[in-house]
Image 1: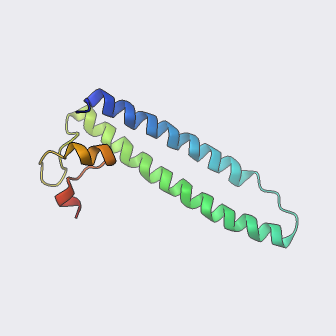
Image 2 (image 1 turned 120 degrees about the horizontal axis):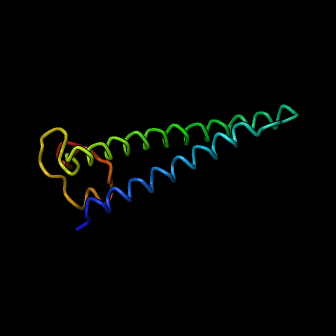
Length: 105
């Protein structure tokens, strides 16, 4: 069984990893200086992929922040919809989930 302190550390580590990735994405997006049309087209495609990665990272950071808030208030590990305890295995897979498996369906 994972302790709440271990969960907090896991969430904080993942949050920092995502923030670092977002900085890298921003740097990459700012670094493009294509000269010809073909290079610009390729860079635009790459930028779209990077932007989607950045959006996904921001969304996950928001979920992690919400989970950290639930830890602070003592609500972590309980379903935000039905109030039942969230299974440990589910929290192992999705430590930021606010819902039990039944309510997530």
